[in-house]
View: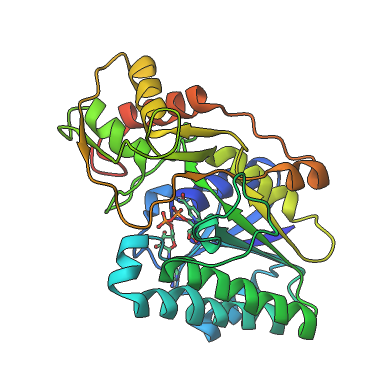
Length: 323
Ligand SMILES: NC(=O)c1ccc[n+]([C@@H]2O[C@H](COP(=O)([O-])OP(=O)(O)OC[C@H]3O[C@@H](n4cnc5c(N)ncnc54)[C@H](O)[C@@H]3O)[C@@H](O)[C@H]2O)c1
């Protein structure tokens, strides 16, 4: 099967491309390289440096490469930045993505897989969060993904485009070849590993008075190989579906720090800071739906997640092409 991966030079896209190639798919990557790395594109994938908003160019690529399915990762994904500059997020994550969806419909693409997010739920009224939990995003990033889910819902109804929206919780970890290298890093595990490496003095803990066992926020961490494999299963879904992608088990900030200390054997310096506004105490997925319906089973626990990320960090201390 010929598949197009947008954002395949980015963190999650690169590992998904790797897994697709391992499983025998013919993979074509479209990425603007605005936030991605050419070194992260698997050598067996055919690469096009192209913006997803360039509909004519996309149309040419989809036709000439005989694309049958699209896995759409390309987006901006910084919650804080989306609050400062919402237009940037609606422009890229909704309007540019709509050009891609339009090209998909015009070329009778069989399946469209969307990287969506738990940020579509906003502050949860129920934890763990099921897929039918009300959606009420608290930032433009989450809103932009929800808007795209709605566009897909109507394109399914009106044009028959089949899609699977995967609402990821916290993506983390690395494959031996590809890992996390964001110019602006906001994710907990890579930041703690920077402390472990001596690249950062300490990690700030934003609040230790949440209603959780140790007072710090709890999140659901999912390894990117488990994530990637869920996308591959989603390619065979009949009809359109929305699934949560988390493990169903939460870890607190302190538990993640403890695990990094165990795995790396290094002491992590911390500093207590004030709560950040809009940080819910717990975000954990009900992950049964995709397990029951697609037979998906995450295999990475927190220890394995950190081992994989640490290994990648030691091999690539400054990320791609900067060693
Ligand atoms: N990382 C997470 O924890 C997480 C959680 C939930 C959802 N997601 C979603 O997963 C997807 C991938 O996230 P990531 O962490 O790999 O991000 P990333 O920034 O590492 O990768 C995104 C890639 O898309 C490319 N891109 C952005 N806009 C583009 C455009 N208009 N045209 C072509 N290429 C473009 C960037 O250059 C980059 O290579 C995003 O859609 C994000 O919203 C990520």
